[in-house]
Amino acid sequence: MLVLEKEAAPALHQSGRNSCVLHAGVYYAPGSLKARLCRQGRQLLLDFCAEHDIPVELTGKLIIATRAGELPRLAELERRARANGLNGVRLLERGELADVEPYVVGEQGLHVPESGLVDYRLVVTALANVVAAGGGTVALSTPVRRLIEVEDGIAVETDRGTVRARVAVACAGVHSDRLANASGAAADGVAIVPFRGSYFSLAGEVAVRCRGLIYPVPDPTLPFLGVHVNRRPDGSVWVGPNAVLALAREGYRRLDVDREDVRDVVTSRPFWRMARRHWRAAAVELTRDLAPHLVARSVARFLPGVERSHLEPAEPGIRAQALLPNGSLADDFIFAETKRALHVQNAPSPAATSSLAIAAVLAERTIAKLGP
Image (cartoon, rainbow, N blue to C red; front, side, top):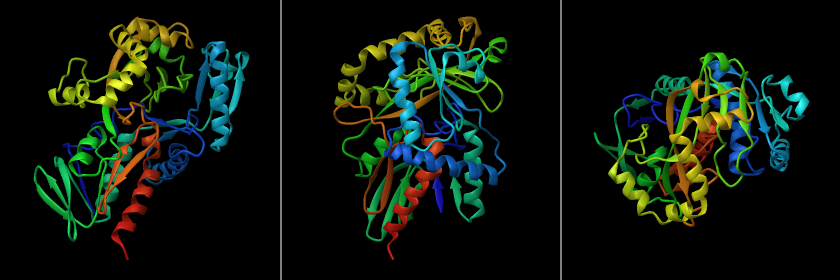
């Protein structure tokens, strides 16, 4: 096995820039690929971490409805959680919230005890070690430009030459649409739009008010979970993320701009269709990105006492959001394939939790391509 990695080290992008949450599967439509692979992936990941001595903490998650209008959506999340087979889920009334998170306020809360924390950078490192131990190679600093099908397999063009293989699997993250297009494998016009998510670290005097994971009830029209508060494996507590259009696919700073990335966005019909549909939400996110006191205000709805002075900038991330041709935000995993190649076209949250289950799907399809 040969793994080609664009960067000089693994997990420098989405795999290492996230909230470190081990998801349980509460949000996803029963029967969807997301729901199934999240549940399978969670258990596979727990087993893998136990085998490789990677710490996992099952902190539990509390999803808070702060207004009466959010109660039906919270009830729907409870229904989905039970349909997806989650264990120990409880709908808590106002007076019961303090049993889980003593400082939280709200109308109701959904307690999801199977959620937790894991450092995915450690997981990626362990996976690289598994590849090496099995006789494989992880080639760093080797960007892939395209995959070309040839008579007896596939030619993988890289910046360091061409590699021949019988089959290939492409997991290009924020560049997945470009690689698929260059390789003739795009899935039904799927386009990637990058969203930057800013995080803040919560000051110590208020960080102690968060035991585990505290989330708001998400907007069901958007594939984002809203600004939440969660403890991390190193003991710090982070607030975030927001979701703002990034002007560079790997631009983690607010003013980072890449001309090619901007061109792809402004010439994308799916993007403008999406923008017309969600411009109000985009305006809210942009305003909050420029005014951190609004982030504090959002959090204070369910965790009183959080103020702007308690927020210190933390490491941001970029979400590779796939858009369908009609401008809809793709909400499930999407795979495209040719005779000799598989392309992961959309792998949003909970992709890290689901990663080993996604790998099993890819392995099964790859073996089928190898033939008898």
